[in-house]
Length: 402
Image 1 (cartoon, rainbow, N blue to C red):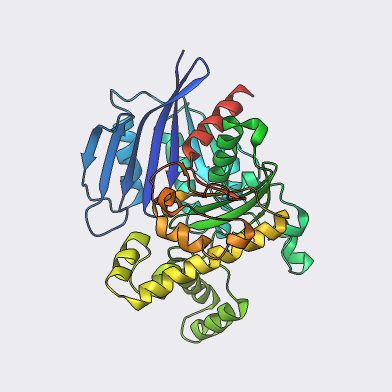
Image 2: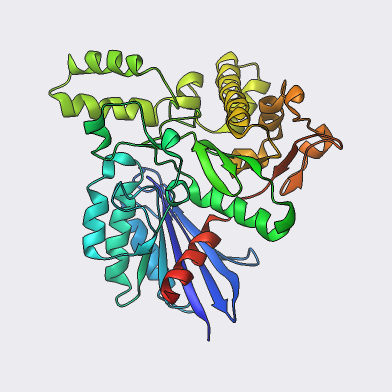
């Protein structure tokens, strides 16, 4: 008996999805696709391809809103040759302080998670919308939420607790972390690969438009760069990363002086720190690392500064987390930038040779999964693609069995 599982992974302007088939304990990807450009005035992109990479759908429709975007996905998957899902798994950044476990979705659970939209304001509204629509468009099919914060749920108290007054901590303000499904997939990959030689002291850097880094000891997270929201930690494509709170207060006072009300000023500040900063804000050009590298090649100083800041902050975190772990056995790069940008990997590791991180430049130039450290490097440095959808499928199957 086969069991098709639909995985839904939504962003602020996109919906990514995949279908996996499980049979006799084996899991295989049947298809994947995406709807991109939701809410844009330009035409969007809707595509589906099989596991062999052959395009099954390739369209450029107008996608004015999420409703239209998700209807494209649901409409296509309701037609042959696509199988009707037996279960649906949803990626969720954070469910708030009261929802820390992966579980089956109910209307009551959705309402509870919706209370904490501010903990992941760019992602939660879209995820909640899709959860509700999936229940309507696939009636009778069980839906499950899989949290990015799940991997970080047992962080040590010294890491989890933020330096704020107790009444605010009691409201649920703490370090939740993100990209947990990616970190979980890397740990699972290494454990399957060689359980007897699993690195006790591991740092994983998930570098993409959203970027974070985690310190992992014995397979369990002990620290992670993102905090209450995904805005903290490393510089990201359009997010500040860690920043002096005084800067935010200065900006907020200026915004409050010209905007009608505190909420409007806070909303505008959120746009600045989440959508207009990071690589985009420093460069004044783009949040895309590939485009920034091209601009650097043309002599653009602002692009050079943006990338230098990104690599500098990443290098600082690698050093800090090595200290947290009391040494380092393995450093793993993952995510779009981590997998594909050899220059970023080299620049982030430059100067860390005395800490045992020594790259082989020829190996570092390779693409895909690879060991990129030099022979004799005390620290093994690897590139491993994340398998977030596969982790979601695993959680869904476990929850269905239970």
